[in-house]
Every structure is written in C-alpha cells, then in structure tokens.
Length: 181
Image (cartoon, rainbow, N blue to C red; front, side, top):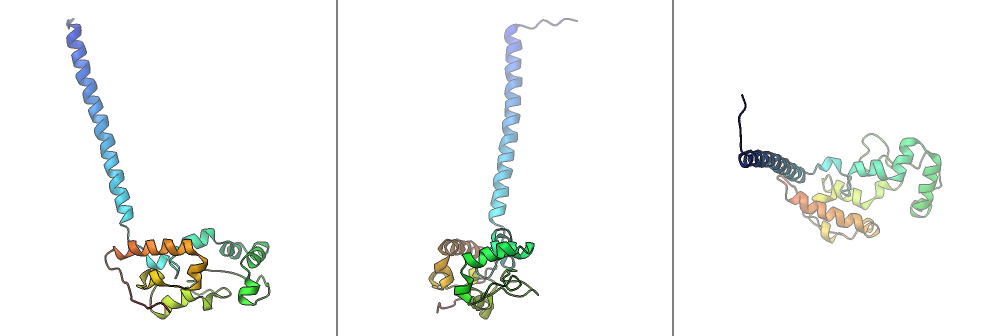
C-alpha cells in the first residue's frame, strides 16, 4: 500500500520530529548541568575535617605529597634530606649537624612517630595544642596572629585565613578567642 504525502506535509513532520529531538537533547544537557552545579555546591558545602589539617591549617595530604623532607623521609633518600637540610638552613635555625637519622619529618601530627627537629618548639603547633584546638583554623585571633611562621609563609597565612572563613560558616564550627601574644 502506497501512501502519498505532500512534500509540505513531509517537511512539516520532519521539522516537528527534529524539534522534539532537539528538545530532548537540550533537556538532557540542562539536567546534567543542574546535576553538575548541585554536585559542585555539595562539594563546597563539605565540612572541613580538622583532623585532616596540620596544626597550622595546611592539609596534611599537601604536606605528604609536596613537602621535600616528608618525601625524603618516606623514601629514605639521604641526598634529598641533605639538600633540604641545607636549603632550610637547619644548622643555623636549630643548631644541629646533619645526620640522616635525625633529619626527617612525619608531619606535625605524627601519631606514634617522633617529631622532626624543631617541631616541638614550633609556635604554630604548640599554640593550638596548648589551647585544646586541632588547628589554627579554630583560633579567633588568627587574623591578628604575628607568629614568625606566618611572616615566613605569608601565602599560607592568607590561605588559612580564607579556610577559617569557610570553616566558620559550617554547622558546629568551634572558634575559640585566643589573644595573640
């Protein structure tokens, strides 16, 4: 059976079909975009895990992947330990001679591992510990803190202050007023 259809009718039906396909594709893209936006919003709202931060507020994962001394310790690389010892001026800062067994780092929250040279005296570590905080991010006096660490690492200081703003906005945030010394 042959059904005759006018060219105009055929083109009209094709246009309707094409429009419907376009609408479905557009709807799929809009839906994926909404999911992506909500996923990003969900990521931004993820609470800050203070246990995952070093006392200064730097993520411990950053230290583990970027710190040369942490890497040298993990890989037991004596040459890299020596290079870091020289680069960081450990002889001048801490008065210690190079000894590969004494130059190491397991982070400032090392658990049952020993602290690196100078870590026990680090003001940015001892201050939150003495006030029962997990990180400087919880300190109400962070914005006016003038510890030498922040003067030596101003970019990190700016980032930690931004992290604190985000932390303050999360439910259950604990900020303790500590007067900077």
